Image 1 (tube, rainbow, N blue to C red):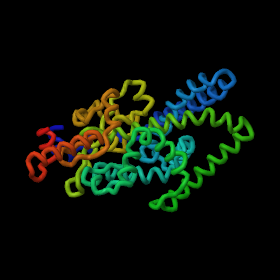
Image 2 (cartoon, rainbow, N blue to C red; image 1 turned 45 degrees about the vertical axis):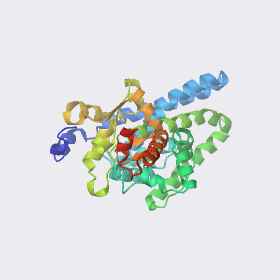
Image 3 (tube, rainbow, N blue to C red; image 1 turned 90 degrees about the vertical axis):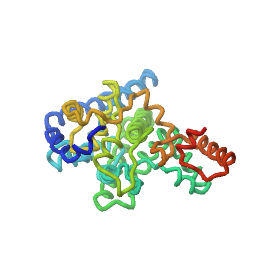
Length: 357
């Protein structure tokens, strides 16, 4: 990360050639992904007559295309997928219906996430709730219990995402304007239409036997991808007065280095440091932009194996500027109590106590 500050004023010139929608690439990616989703969904439905295990296998393939549809939906919201706003909106709405997400409502909250990522004073919209140690210690017992449940892997990567996509996105939010509320209503109406059509054709039971596993896995995968791209051992978190958009992108967003097949399945979203630096770059141009520019080749990198440790990081330690687990926090508190008893002094920094223990 050397000399990043010296190049912060020039990065716009580097990304500009890649921040252009290629209609042929966009149409090919969209149509091939949509056809892949439709085909695997149809095969999953047909296989219900043979074996549900075979159905689940086809559902797994369908999940890959579902995640890619969400990336296309995501890119339309960023305004980089087609040059026509009207076309982006149509495709965004269509993809949003298939992934249970209202287009404009999600786009607005996600835009706030991009504008405030890594800013300690502007947390709360479009991001993962993360408390610092000081904030956590001020909570009453009920809110501590809530936070423990909220940050438990089962809630973070399974139950929570499923509730968000199936329940929370069916309602408007306080920050929603007229356009965002309309997107919620239209998406709900379209989903109701799909359920009605299925009721009179394949039957709701068969529909849910296929769609439920797809949605469950896709929600979990999407949540995991979003999580590891900002929640790792040494993230970038700064107060408003010290916060930098450039540093928040390249230091506060990871490069999730996945095997090629998983990179395809996730629509290159693992190159998250570059995506946060310039959301104007379509997903299919991200890798080329990184490979062509040395500035973007030294991000915080996580491999698939390394990323699993991130699931148990829960609290931000401002002293060491790192995310730690509840287990590490408890060990740190015991260490502090031990030092207090032995020395009878005021506490030093958290890092001092860790070294003393």
